[in-house]
Length: 270
Image (cartoon, rainbow, N blue to C red; front, side):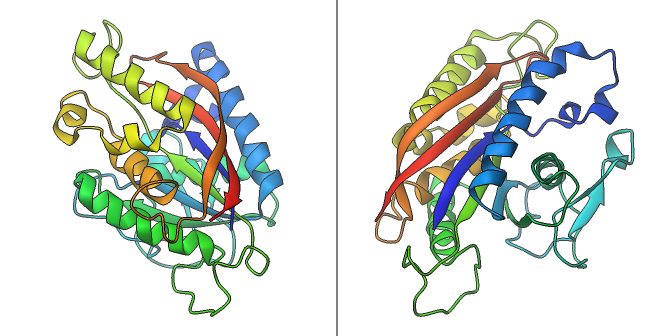
């Protein structure tokens, strides 16, 4: 059953070794991510990490390596998803961030294990809704997407699972933003996204327009729409719970990109 949802940005500069000691602008968002990492680690030892592939057409549910590093982003700082070493595709950025968050929660230990759940950044809202149904089943099955346990879905028989969502917002929120400078349309869209995450408004997330999000550089749209379906959308017959409370620890754009850190606490299982 779902224990907690933690939402963090897919930002390499969260990692101190990549940001460097002079990058003080990253400290507030990093502190918020560390706080939600500790909360997710206290809530569950098994996590599913939901995030986008680095490019369209390369998504998969679990066929990824269990370790990787940030060498492609300047410093080969290693991260692990926990459990025994596994072969597979290299971890995309979203899963590298998940590995770093796991390390912050686990203090270098072996208690927490993370199952990657990687989505295509260009999936349509309907495809995201279908993936959310699958994710809801996996959460109800204790984090195992292949479980055939007849008792799965029973909140008294399954393991508590944490859901870590790694996703970025708009990329045109300041004059020097990587998405081409500041645009009012991006600011308005980011406000809608932040408000939806702050209220756990799954309907508003499901209604995000794919073309508008692409135009404003929203890398996390697909992940948020999968989350919406798993926690309150078309997957209602198997969804693990409604969201009882939502809390935002950070919402800002220190580098012109929308970074939101939030926690959703589940209510009673359905």
